Image (cartoon, rainbow, N blue to C red; front, side):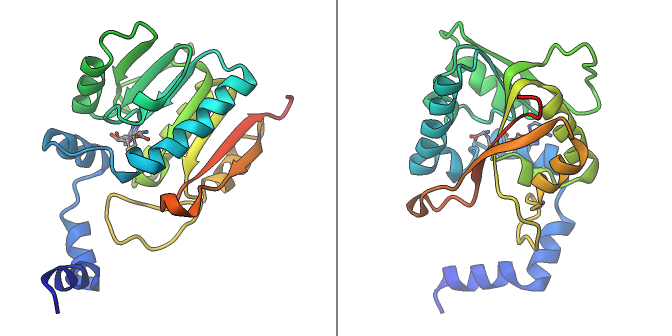
Length: 221
Ligand SMILES: C[S@@+](CC[C@H](N)C(=O)[O-])C[C@H]1O[C@@H](n2cnc3c(N)ncnc32)[C@H](O)[C@@H]1O
């Protein structure tokens, strides 16, 4: 058996999965350590996957006349480099990712960035709001229940007219500790009665992307 196959098999055994879960230090620490070690936002933020996500969301922004975007989990900025938004605020839990974005987009007066840490921020006055609130491939990385709840409430509170989500919507077994798959549409249907799912678009098979795009609008729209 080739070394790669041996490693994959070891990693997917019950013991391998348990060991990785035991050594996992939480979603916030995971992303900060990953970026600090030179890692990226992942394959979904590069190549054909990133292009499909950007093409779809850019088209919605144009078609629906969205005037500003608040991005909850902006990542390393590669996905953002393909975006065409009139006015943008990118938030991320990783300070390293936010510093990358500040540097990369330093000449762009339409883009602002802010590091935020759940539990160290209160926004009842609604400063962190945009015409559209965006969540791109973040939800299935929210491993902890309290972090998931906090994030989802902030996301929907951050939208004036639209919420756009790119995620999978399944719940099940994950082999990596930094993923937790959930049916977020069921959560929204239960917890956000003022919002309805307007559109869902699946990715082309050739991207290999597991996430679809979802557009929510107020029930009054
Ligand atoms: C897979 S990356 C996606 C980045 C970007 N949205 C994209 O599509 O390229 C997930 C990002 O979510 C961020 N993140 C994780 N938990 C978060 C939270 N509770 N609030 C905001 N961002 C978070 C991570 O730091 C990471 O940058």
